Image (cartoon, rainbow, N blue to C red):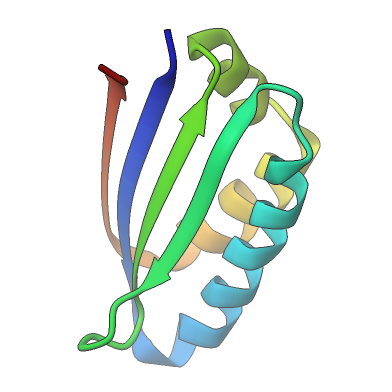
Amino acid sequence: MPYAVVAHYRCEPQDADLVREALLKAREHTLDEPGNLAYIVHADAATEGAFTLYEQYEDRAAFNAHAASEHFAEHILGTVRPRLVERDVHFGDVL
């Protein structure tokens, strides 16, 4: 069963360009993962530094492989998360 992640991130406006760049680099690598079905990054039109990600994987194991990847560690854990002032993530099975 497909597995989805919806993440809402917010950083300070001065960090927005760096976070945006890291999210787009993460997207490049994630789209090449064999179990990835979608990785969509949205920048909020009204709030500088606010982003929403929609990710979909073949199953939970594919997501776990993604979360254990080198590029996830570099771009998400190493660059994005330290700059977030708000993070809200939801996981679920796609119906």
